[in-house]
Structure formats: C-alpha cells, structure tokens
Amino acid sequence: MAQLQLPIFIEGVTLITSDLGYSKKDGQIIYFNGSLPVFTHEESDLGSFKMILSQLYINGSASQPQLAKAFSIKTQAVKRWVKKYRDEGIEAFFTEKRGRPPKKK
Image (cartoon, rainbow, N blue to C red):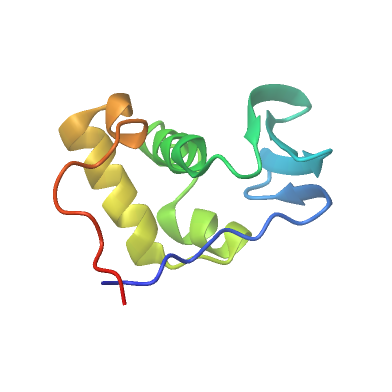
C-alpha cells in the first residue's frame, strides 16, 4: 500500500499560478483567485483538499505540475484525484471506503 503524502501548507500567501494562490491562517486553508477568496477548508480536511485541487485542474485554473509543486506532492497523486473526480464525482472524496479493514501488525 502506498504511503500517504500530505500536502505542505506554507504560512502566508503562496502562489500556485500568477492568478491563483492559497494562504494558511488559524488552521484554515483559503484559496484565492486574484484577491478574491474562492474556497476554504480545515488544514486537516484531505477530502476537500483533493476535491479543490481536482476542480482547479479541470476548470483550467492550474496545471497538474503547478499544483504538485505548490503543495510539495507528487504529480501522480493529482492525476489520481482528477480521475477519481471525473469518474465518481465530488462525493467520492467524502465517502468512507468499503472493504476489508487494514491488517493489524
């Protein structure tokens, strides 16, 4: 099983593209298009993080490499999330996985 690679949220405003950025404040991540806030989520909310990155790519706001670089994650992870978004919709990021529980060591 692949190890989860968490995003790195840097304090202050970090640019993803020349028009798109995000900031971290009091445990909240706020995404901006220009100076306009467009989305916010808790720092620990990985479902929302994956969903918004997928939307930013699908809407043409940023490329997969730009998103990967801005958050210090692998481009392959962004590709998986985009595929999941396209195949299963937004709900896929917020539903529990079904199947066998992980093995205890």
